Image (cartoon, rainbow, N blue to C red; front, side, top):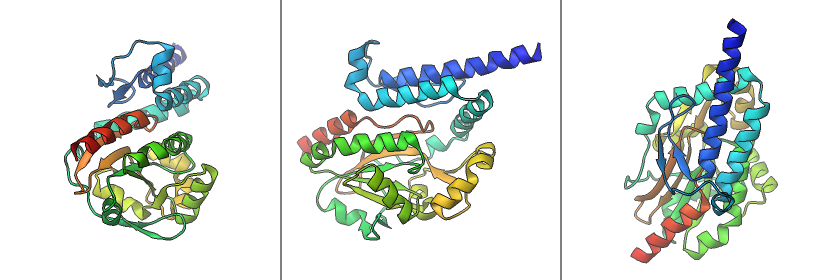
Amino acid sequence: MASRKRLSKIETLRHRTVELAQMAALGFVVTAGSSAAQTTSKSMQPETKQAATSRPLEAKLAEMADSFAERAEPEKLEAYLTAIQNLVDSGILEQTLGLNDEAPAFELPNATGETIVLDELLESGPVILTFYRGGWCPYCNVQLQSYQQHLDEFQALDAQLVAISPEKPDNALSTTEKNELKFNVLSDAHNDVADSFGLRYEIDPLIAERFGPMLADFNGDDSHTLPLTATYIIDTDRTIRYAKVTADYKLRAEPADLIEALTKLKAED
């Protein structure tokens, strides 16, 4: 009987992950985790192939999440979903910077060791700033590749794209090269800049047991911290004009939404 109950719980978690993935593909923002997700519709699109193809990044990430949920070991799936829910329950999402907040100034090294200064970038126009976990994360790589594909469109709207992770510069360089990125990828040691945006968190102890040594190698410290996945558009006066922050690492800002926000911002000039 106990075994049957456990199987039922795991199947519920698996179906919940698939459900969240499908919702993401339809343009929903998921702001909670496995058990009681609160959702707000960004685009009330019908469940059609057209809806998925109109938001290709979300569709790809949803497909990846669906595939993982179907093949993952039950204990691993439960640990990941519980970690997301615990992160939501921590209240961190209420502490992050958001729309109309002032972005903090920073300077960080890029993959080749050049120091990149936010205020200097903003002299040329708005900045798309995206925080990702690391080159070891398949969802992050898909996001970065997608943004690279839209880089010309971002630049046509006078925007520069910058990605930040806690990876050491050498690992940031590897991420840049393997994804053929043509924008700045910055190394945020100890997640200090992420912390200034309210994004830094310590990973769940169960996850740390499995991934702690890997993170220490990639990031050069044993703090077991990561940034929430977040994407901002920062105006030239450092005002945040767009923000998507989520506790679920499988969800990222869609390029079409960034282009829409940049178009509106340019029209205001």
